[in-house]
Structure formats: structure tokens, C-alpha cells
Amino acid sequence: MSSTTPGPSSADREIDAIAGRLKELKSVLGAAYWRNGEVRDLQQMLRKQIGAYGAWSEDKLPMHQRARRAARYESEFAALLWPGRDADG
Image (cartoon, rainbow, N blue to C red; front, side, top):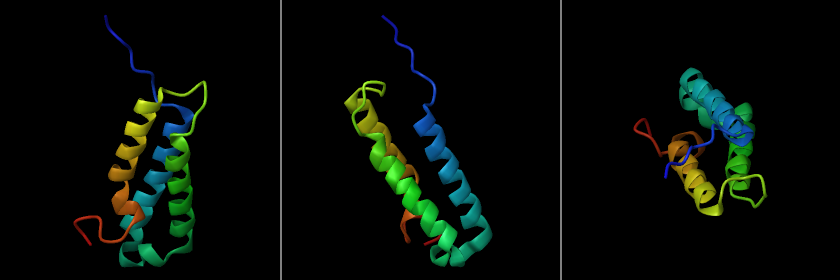
């Protein structure tokens, strides 16, 4: 029995787009990243999207899969959301 993994959902694409923009800003702004207004707004959006990722809906992945993906996103993007979570400090 084989299962197919669905492609990225619109929520996945939105999370990736916000994280991509934060990565760009972190690269450009350096230490000023943590004090930038656009960064704070995007961080808030990313946290909200990750939090909403696990919310129930009939058209979403099963709960255990959503929970794992949300945890993976939190871990993967921790350096963009919280100071001191990456090698650069």
C-alpha cells in the first residue's frame, strides 16, 4: 500500500513566502533586523500562520500531520522569530 503526499497547501506556501521575506531582511539588515518594524509585522504574521496551521478544518491534513508540520515550522524558522536562536546570535 502506498500513499501519496499532497503538494504544499496555500498555508504552506504563505508560511514559506513570509519566512523567505524574513530571511532576506535578516541578510540585508544584520543586527538591525530585530529592531525593524517590517520585520516585527512579518514575525507576527508568521507566528499567526504557524499557530493557525494546526486549527481544525475538513479540508486540512489529519491533526497529527498538521501538528508535526507546525512544530517543524517553529523549529525551522526559530532563528527568524526569536533572538539568540541561530549561530549568529
